[in-house]
Length: 277
Ligand SMILES: *[C@@H]1O[C@H](CO)[C@@H](O)[C@H](O)[C@H]1NC(C)=O
Ligand SMILES: *[C@@H]1O[C@H](CO)[C@@H](O)[C@H](O)[C@H]1NC(C)=O
Ligand SMILES: *[C@@H]1O[C@H](CO)[C@@H](O)[C@H](O)[C@H]1NC(C)=O
Ligand SMILES: *[C@@H]1O[C@H](CO)[C@@H](O)[C@H](O)[C@H]1NC(C)=O
Image (cartoon, rainbow, N blue to C red; front, side, top):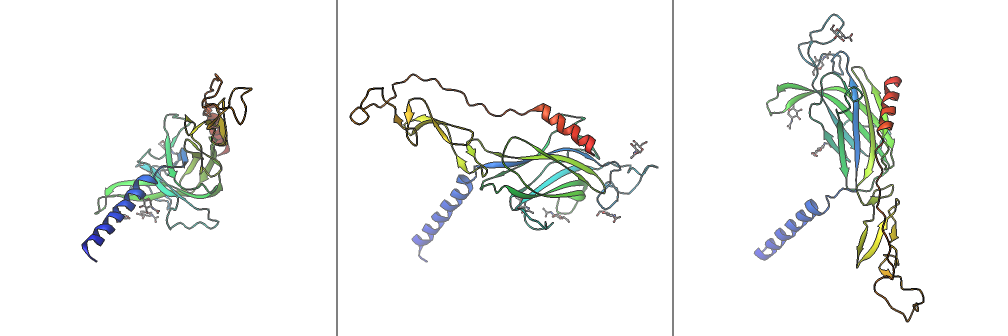
């Protein structure tokens, strides 16, 4: 290869890299999971040992040392037979250490443990999630990371349509019980079951519209056409021979109101959970 060709390849490579890293990162939506609580009464790992070694216990079986609990979420395509290994095709995310053996958002409403995974693809409605509660050992391994020990692994395959509503679920394992809720939210201006339908309100020469709840364009008063870019002329103005560039109308515009999160609903869901355990 001669020099100009190499230069050309280099430039194309850089261009591709810039495109891939900068232009395609805007998320069309996100999967959100909030841990509402974990109850690990004895402070144990999934294999029955104490989180904190050596394994020293009180008379009632409770470990003397506390777990240092954090959570990891792995999201992948819907699987009927979930493989524990393999890539998290929709992404993975972890929290820092968020508590000891147990905590509950009901007892401490300000203790939010949220795992959020933005996605840039069409939401498929179905998914498989793996939620791990993990003990982070304080000792470091030679590569400089902390040792991790699994407290519980929860696996769930489901169907979820984007919306503000949370779905609540639980896990009861050998060491701990976990309750959590999840939802899928489309990013602002993205609509539909797929979060792939785009509508951004505008009022300029390319269009004069707002968006309804389905993401369909709704022309502002005085405008018409597929992109609401044609002015509606004065009554009596000839539809073919008449002409106007701004609408003959002094309309008012309404505010878009977003859905508001209902704190009563959360309380209800939490109570439901406490009783359901
Ligand atoms: C449980 O796992 C820990 C960490 O891997 C290990 O040290 C301990 O011996 C295991 N306990 C049992 C009962 O297998
Ligand atoms: C075990 O005993 C300790 C200390 O008395 C107490 O704090 C803890 O709640 C007990 N755990 C269980 C599971 O009864
Ligand atoms: C988790 O995400 C990181 C980067 O975000 C990635 O390198 C890693 O492979 C993912 N893990 C799995 C199991 O998919
Ligand atoms: C560090 O080592 C541990 C075990 O020795 C391993 O599980 C972990 O994946 C390693 N982490 C990195 C970032 O290499």
